[in-house]
Length: 194
Image 1 (cartoon, rainbow, N blue to C red):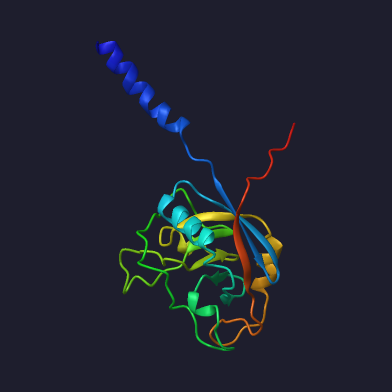
Image 2: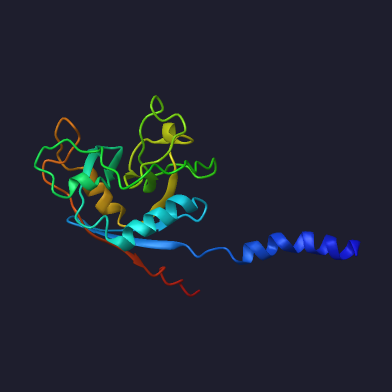
């Protein structure tokens, strides 16, 4: 009986690993080209929320409303869908904030997909926006441990770079709108044969 219990204790973690979810891939077609993303399984609240919004067509027609050259591009504000030129954006939400899933082993890097959020002064729990996200481009180590990174760009870093170079106003909004035409779930890339 003791052996059986020990064997079960040893095998249960292995059974859980065998059921690990497949990664989810998303393509964002923008007015400047396509960006493909993979969502991390280690951040299931953020992954599942993003998938839900993509399936609902939530991101279709929204803007990359904030671009900070050499740093990041930000999108996902529902108020941007019909925003007038120069309108200040960044406050729109799709629901309640999402609990932080900040993992010390998931760090910002070029192409990291992370959840936007309000600052620590009003959000000490570091909860994430229900819909707004950013893609890191430049210096970002100071963000590690403070924002939930829940995916990364797998194709289209050149598109992110080009968006990051657009002219912006004093509020970091692009002077010429950069729009997400459509976001959709896609199949994982085919594995290369050796």
